Length: 310
Ligand SMILES: Nc1ncnc2c1ncn2[C@@H]1O[C@H](COP(=O)(O)OP(=O)(O)O)[C@@H](O)[C@H]1O
Ligand SMILES: N[C@@H](CCOP(=O)(O)O)C(=O)O
Image 1 (tube, helix red, strand yellow):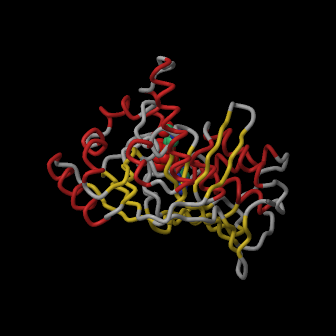
Image 2 (cartoon, helix red, strand yellow):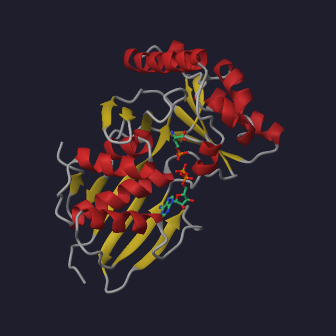
């Protein structure tokens, strides 16, 4: 058994895409995955509370798979420990639960190994695992991130979060990201790609210049949302109607089925979404979220350690 002082990794959830920023833009919010590690002679995984009832409590657990890979990258043999999972991030709803687990696993190994990896290296490892930098970038850095990954190199620019109310509309039915990526085309007609890319550019400029009036146009996407409409009841109506009912803009959160509304009047938006999903006979949680501007942290008994050297 390798001795280490007990510690906790705290990782924020994330939304990805914000519409046309597909696989590129992410944003962190104040719902967290907490992983508490302590020494143990055997691998002992417990879910203390929260949304993690369906996850395996053995070596098939995503956090453990990621940690084994991280130890292998570091050329250090894996050793057992006790892990308590407290999870506020709903699973398979488009709020980056898997990215949080991946970031949490790498950050934990980095801490156990004395912080050998920089933040950029942690971003590279976690992006390679997830296949896109939007969720892992947000969970690692916090705030809004704009990034790019070509399969070899990853670049992320963290930007400030908008000071606006955010509303997550979280349906009870799960949707695995793998399934929602499977419905996307392999190629796009030029006009469609150019228009969607121009909206992504407009979105970044609108966020930086606080041009909230442009969000409904700038969040209109042609890369993924049209193909996911059939998997997400309510998405089509919400895109057309929510900007008339308290939202500056609305998008599918990640691969869905959660919708994320950036609000000018959160009470009006809540009332709109409540009515919409009542008509569709789908149970939803309406959750107000606040931006999380710090990414993953490690907390020991007496200190908070921000991850990776800058
Ligand atoms: N805390 C966790 N511990 C272990 N596995 C997790 C954890 N969080 C998520 N997962 C795994 O990730 C899956 C969901 O990932 P995904 O389909 O990408 O959805 P999302 O990331 O949008 O929540 C879960 O079904 C589970 O297998
Ligand atoms: N860009 C990805 C984001 C997936 O996010 P998740 O939270 O649903 O895993 C995509 O749109 O597929």
